[in-house]
Length: 111
Ligand code: AMP
Ligand code: ZN
Image 1 (cartoon, rainbow, N blue to C red):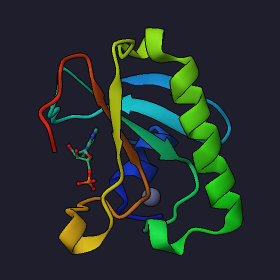
Image 2: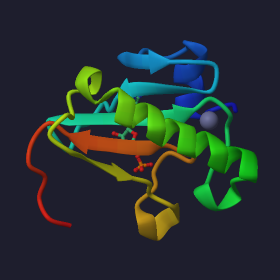
Image 3: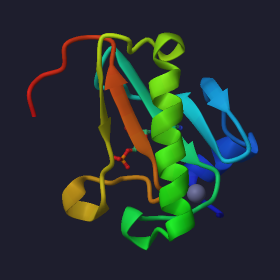
Image 4: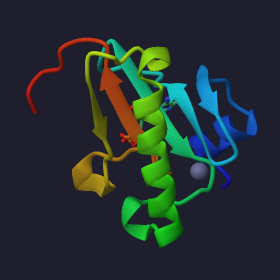
């Protein structure tokens, strides 16, 4: 999608620090980390909002969660982690391309 920062990263038109990539999604470092480890898991397919997701999308999200749990060592989150999806304006979503925040690497504050 034109003008989407995550689509540009996926296409290699913008730089990123990539920790994982397969045909369906990438995991990159967040440019403005809010924890010692702050990563973003981003599906390659441009879907703006979680509430626009199809059942295919939910399968992919499940696969992403499984992959994260299997990559804890490489991602630096073996002592625990928090997954966050912001939806829409009230949820604080700023990039309208579905992504999962992966936070960890330290004891996170209570929500
Ligand atoms: P959200 O507020 O849930 O939409 O999260 C968007 C996240 O994307 C924020 O944590 C930003 O710091 C992050 N972000 C924005 N631009 C980039 C970029 N070029 N590379 C990596 N992370 C980015
Ligand atoms: Zn996009």
